[in-house]
Length: 270
Ligand code: ARG
Image (cartoon, rainbow, N blue to C red; front, top):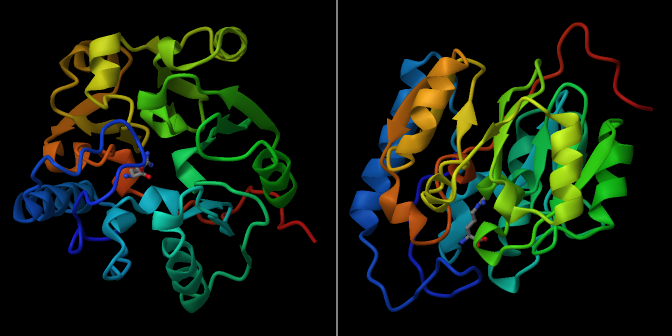
């Protein structure tokens, strides 16, 4: 996670960002600290990436790298406003002893558009990550990529429209309206039991959630998701991220998940 020390909305690269609307940086920091503390209270380790002045969106750490089996694929941002974030992420992983850190050739906004299940790497496209980033990620991680076409500019990253609830069990929730008809059919085929979010909950960033397989941290305004999550055995943990929503991000955007290499995982590719 990267604290929103330099957070502001000074440009607009998605429909949520209105530079004329005031942002309360102190409140943004409090909300971010609350999220960090909840992760720690749930027993998760939180590593901190130092924020860089002049990069107000750097709080959205999920866009900086994708880490699967301890292998790190960096990001290449679509918008010039954010390109400076990518090297900071690469440097952090290299400095923390990750042996395999790759700078990508193609535009990809990391976990903004890549989601991991046990079977697949789900990969969004349409607004940010390029089509050519999909085979690049498949080759790097050795996991089959399922390309998913986003069609609604409010849901410009995959992680605004779909969340993995249980990586091991391939359990997800998503908002069908964010995807093309063909992609909706693909999702229905692969995940027939998925939790389908209503438009209001999607608009409240309810899909921008982080699950540890039991607890699901999500914006408190996405109320409609709580009961169906409980019915499926998950424990919703509502948090207030309202100041970050002004830049088009919420819980998941602020969280880059480090998936370590561990026993049972195939050896790194040569
Ligand atoms: N203002 C940022 C952008 O438009 C928000 C990024 C949100 N991050 C995410 N993982 N969806 O790039």
